[in-house]
Length: 214
Image (cartoon, rainbow, N blue to C red):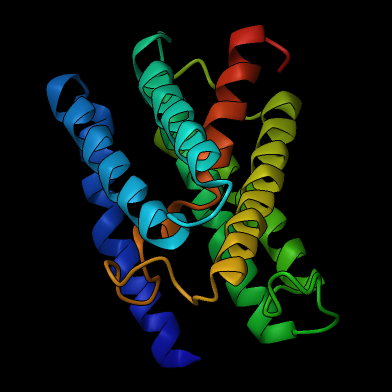
């Protein structure tokens, strides 16, 4: 567990500043970065599901998901703040689920992903909410996005969608009889393994922000 955690930890530490750099700078750099991530994700999906009936539907969803990332960054006044918020909530959900699941273990959540536990689910929620509060309270203090009940609900929603997205990709990996979608990121596997929750959280978050539900 320790070696696996260290791989995931150092991979995350290296990736986060790179991702944040592109998000904050925006413009061509951001658009190119999003397109590159889409190409890699689409390739991993292709290799995993090219002979499956749901292959085309998966590609369409990936296009929709990455388009929502572009729209989130460019169609909102504080788009990059929203992107940072969503990414932090998703990463925290993943880390919280991994740590709590391995430390406290307990009943399994579902057969789709045997390593998922109820303690991990709780840990994902807890860390997502705490990190979202910390981000809006101490990091993006120049933003109109402030810690309040609406943000609490939003981070809870993002964490829920992220965990469901993780299960959906795990389900398709099981159908394809593979453990990881690739070997691009040490400790995580492929890019889809790393962003499985995000590709679901982004489009749903975009629709919520677009309709001003939260």
